[in-house]
Amino acid sequence: MAKNITARSKDYSQWYQDVIKEANLAEHSPVRGSMVIKPTGYALWENMRDGLDRMFKDTGHQNAYFPLFIPKSFLSKEASHVEGFAKECAVVTHSRLISTDNGVDVDPDSKLEEELIVRPTSETIIWDTYRNWIQSYRDLPILVNQWANVVRWEMRTRLFLRTMEFLWQEGHTAHATEEEAVAETRQMLEVYRTFAEEYMAMPVITGVKTESERFAGAVETYCIEALMQDGKALQAGTSHFLGQNFAKAFDVKFQDKDGDLKYVWATSWGVSTRLIGGLIMTHSDDDGLIIPPRIAPWQVVIVPIYRKDDEREAVLEYASSIKKELADAGIRVKLDDRDQYKPGWKFAQHEVEGIPVRVAVGPRDVQNEKAECVRRDTKDKQLAERSGLLEMVRGHLDQMQQDLLNNAKKRMEEGTRHVASYDEFREVLEKHGGFIYAHWDGTAETEAKIKEETKATIRCIPLFEDDESGECMVTGKPSARKVLFARAY
Image (cartoon, rainbow, N blue to C red; front, side, top):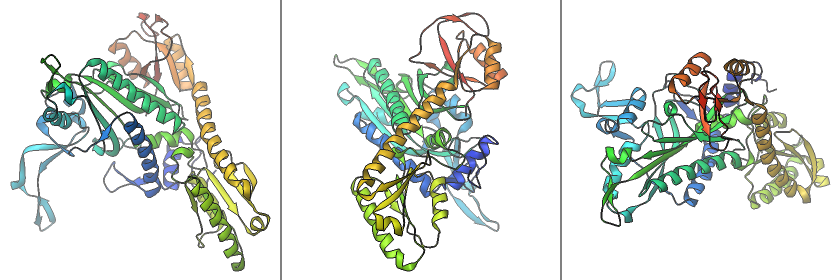
């Protein structure tokens, strides 16, 4: 266990904070509830962003950018939307400051005619814009995504998982038919599932949110739900079928092939830097961060080892040749040739930062044309022939990616249970946590009762579970199928 990292078994929440600090991912900023994402953390986000961006473009989407500030009146146009976000909005009321004896103050003469909302999400300003872009069926579909920051005035914050300002992407699409919009919503859910499992090695359950958990202004909200090592769920991404709600609110119509005017159908979908929190809590251990190779900023680090100055040149030349070979093969590799740190310190730091594979070379390795190769997750050491090192590193990266997914799947399977009664539900929840499948009568009253009494929520109505009918575990009323419960972040 790393010296400055609390054991997960002792205090999971502190462990999470310690990993972020020791791995140099982020830190708290002077602004309450906001974070500074450090270069290592931002490099990780960049790799996530780039992977998702390729998937978005492969499905026909383009990137655009819309304003950070939204006129307050825009949020009033869609009733459920404004109700859902009203308590989280940051509001700009004045346009400038003036100098005073105490420094600066708000200029009372600069009060805005209409207050501006710092975007909590962009549906309103985007649909006001789409009104100018859409006249005919020939203008549809519009498949747009933006990479941006948003502000939601959270009272309880935690780095990456819930902050007042965070980075994300938000897709906003417009369609001629309901069928197209629903297909888009489901397609983007599948993109998120694929990214979570194939890039992040994080297995997820796909499903539909209940009405009370639905995105404000949506007809249906689809989600991916992941299970963390402490048995709590994490909503890792959402895709919303918005129906015609925003088109009607902003009067966005199109002329169809028959010349009739119709309202446009809409979707929106997004994931955020919360994914980094999910990655940490899915894979990392008491020695620090573990990153799946596909999204690791550095996949391999090479550490040269020498005691005498006359060994330095030969070792560094040998290490540099390894770096070139790996880099030429498309592997993200760095050579840690800093003289001010000893190899042992470097080993510990690269371990806590989660670099998937470490290669160490010393004078004897140069003479024998070998190198030591260590996987971050298993800590297994292997001595490789220089001629076979590239093949070994590739094998380690591929196997580690698969092993992390397999281990997380096994953990999720072991942490998932089915219950028949409310007493059994509460017992399992307190003893094990995790995902719990149970029958629910479909009413908001029963859902609220379970949440109030147990702090567990319906994470989703799964898309691919058996539709076996039964009786609600609380009321005994008929239930069409089981739903997925958990306590969550």
